[in-house]
Length: 262
Image 1 (cartoon, rainbow, N blue to C red):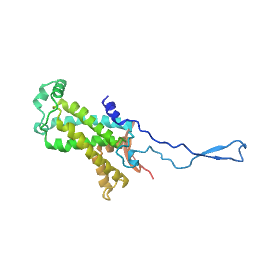
Image 2 (image 1 turned 120 degrees about the vertical axis):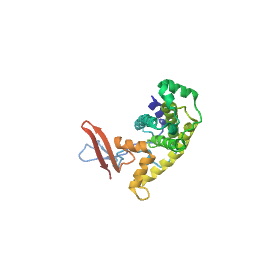
Image 3 (image 1 turned 180 degrees about the vertical axis):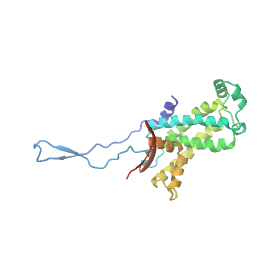
Image 4 (image 1 turned 90 degrees about the horizontal axis):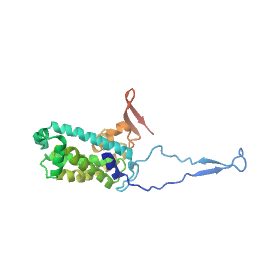
């Protein structure tokens, strides 16, 4: 249900112009005089569905890939649960979580108490509030932006993930929702995310190179768009058609492949 709600932010209908197929009529001696045959236009047609990276830069272009956006959302949810487990292992002064309350209060009772009391101005470590949370917001934003969502829809998606899914969802089991995380994560994250999106466009236009280095370019792509780049290894990366590496599960186990297109 959460995945469906989040994807709805990026599924507004976009009117697109289409061009009718062109045909040439050729009479032939081998056919009756009144018969003609049609030869399809021989102009080369793309063998792939264009992505947002194939179009000129735009803040308003919206052409979401709903299927992959659902996969991204489910992956973010699973990653959030994993992150919660990692944070549980950190010392109390790092997360500002009351470990005694966590141990002594039933799970959903604790969640309801935190939701009812919030939001508050938290005292989390500044690295969490002003470095990791904005970066997380940028990752949420890019998760939607790379899959074709407009800037405003990517912001709404990131806001929904950071607020509904994280602040009032997973994290609320352990602490009261905070004002900083509700605003800094999606707003600063969206600003960073759009900068990441423009940088990714430049890197892809330069054949995944940055400052002349493909190694640096590829490392940067994984850092600025971790969700799409990591999942692209599994279900394919539409933005990397010229050279794509993939790892897919099969009945016999895992299968790796490298495809090159010219």
